[in-house]
Length: 249
Length: 251
Image 1 (cartoon, chains in turn green, orange):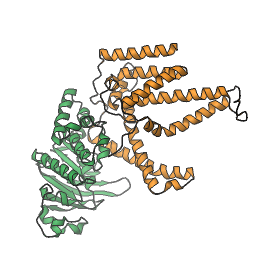
Image 2: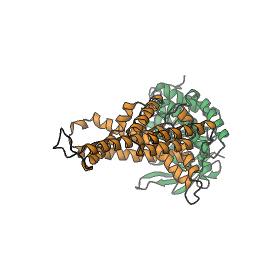
Image 3: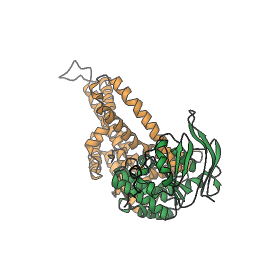
Image 4: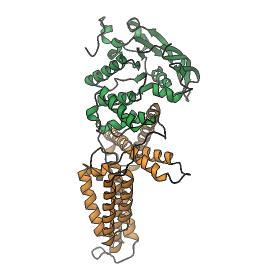
């Protein structure tokens, strides 16, 4: 059974804009799935349905067999969401306080919260910055802090919305290596991005969206050749007819 | 990298940071009450002490004045109102000015008091996490069963958390407008309109994103709050503040 099971999902924004149009998908545990498409294609809208930030007008989203609508709190615990704008995701005054935010919302004991914060900070390499104010972090550090904040909630799935936006080369590499570490640890990753260059080498599956619909779904190598017809720039290596290469190599 | 502003929490290990937030509330209340009722000598003593505390916390006095500039404008109005409305002897050098010597003295003291009260609040916010303030508010409201303590505490905590973000947004909007030559326009109404519309739009968008991020991390009013525990040191500090305030009342 797929860990994410989406069945004929439809969503329209209050102003009438079509967000999603009969989207059906199944995503297996432990895979790294890239969702791509031009601006307004429905990538972020789809991610926001995974943990109930948006509710479908019709269709269902099931996480590990249970409908998101039936148990919202469970869905939000199981699906960690890393937003495009790291600044608006950071709610704590210090690095440690921000990581503690999620576990505190789960009403865990103070000792358990402390243990989870420590483990999450170790996982993303931010232990030395634990007492630093969050405004003082660099872009890459903020993105890693967002990951730590989500990790502390012990999710099974981590959804990334444009994880490389605004990051320099070292920042991109840091975030990418965190993502791969999460996958190695058994998490399922769903990455929404139009910047395929940085992630395509590591993707197990590529889903292309356009106008709120899934227009292509399959192995990246097969789809990437025709990706530009959907308004997404193909990675340089693909345009040059070369083999894809990891940004970490 | 965003700059820290004076209205947010500044992590640290000072005695003020370590003081139990309930005791800090008590001390703040006593100090504010004293500031609003005492004469100029106690005001001078409290100003000196609070300025040195701010310096020790790493807060720049110049930065605080810069960020309080609109509040200072309000204080100028308060001063003018007191100076103009208080009866008394006219100024010997400027008899044509419709203000009295007593009015100017009263205005100066009122402005000093108000500024000091705001300054105390600023020191409090700079040394106290929003979550701790929420926990203390809930604790103080617990004896009143009809009041939704959790909700009130949550609202206060969120407001305090939002204040630095509002200043950051305002700064970013102002910078963007300066970059496009807004300073060459003299009409204050035009400048205010140009500033307010993008600022408010940006602010509401940020608030929406912030709310979404909190929801995504299971935000609830009944979350685990910081543990509040009174230690002997807290009692000593509160006693010290009470003693100092007592002395100031006697001055």
